[in-house]
Length: 90
Length: 318
Image (tube, rainbow over all chains, first blue to last red; front, side):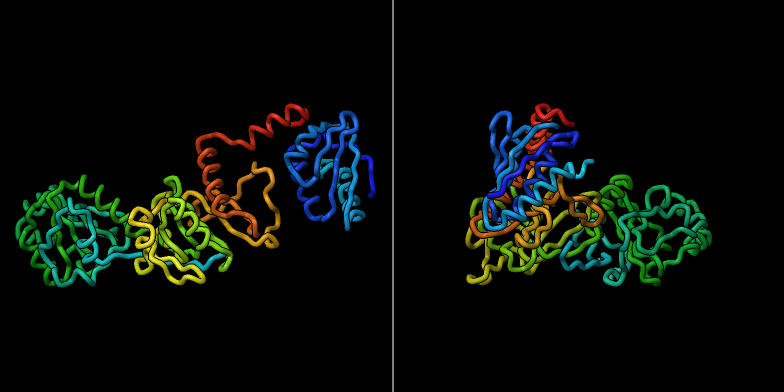
């Protein structure tokens, strides 16, 4: 089960449009993709928009990512890249 | 739009105009009874013949109804017989589709004589010109509205017209049947005739297939027989388009619901919802909900927006 540490670097945080991008990307993979806020331990399923919004993650928030499933390697790579690209805002 | 579209340039013969026009016009035929079927009205706009009678006939359009009222009749009456023939000689009678005389005025016999010779229908109404023009223009606007046929199903839901489109075999008719059994109104299956009237899109069923639906496995069904007269409607103003798509064909599935897609028909923008189809998704409930969401948005309330605004305040973004 690969894991990674993420940081929200885009100015608007994990707002609605970014969240929708994440959810759409996550839905392409079979694996279960879990996001956990490091400061509050609130967790979210990356395939559910309401769940991702519940993280209420502003810029600078640190998140632990864990992926579990058949295509976990590809999935974690894609999610890490999306966060690193700042959801196309940078 | 992923559908076959066929466009017709609509026209109406003078005979059809008389037959279908609103009863209040009480149209009588004074001349040219035998020529009504051959004369075609092509524009919803009317013209008045005054200036043409006075000699300026350059702008007389053949496809428009020519209105003759009190002023034209009085003008003709004050002329001598020779002058009348001269005034009427300004007109190319063969090129005019018909003349409509208002206020039950009696045209000079010279006009009737030439009209009969040149096969020009002369009609008469008891209404005054201004009233006649209003009624005729409205009526022609509807009759001559541009029309096309779209492959889809039209229903009336919560009093708005909902057009369901999608590839054949995706389940449009089955979805419609489900919605009809829940009490929604059936307008047309498979082919929907759409007319643009002003900025509205009016949809109705082709005459032949009115009340009929085809369900694979059951065959052709008559909805009025099965569900009663209140289950079918003649026409509906289309306000929302729902597209059913195979899950694999949807490029981007809507997850938030802030952005609304659009469908353009005759240049009129129609809000559109794309619903991915798969087993375990109850389509009729989804369509019904899409319509409720549309009604709320139309009234200025958007649930998704309210949540996103709340969320943005917390995240501190936009």
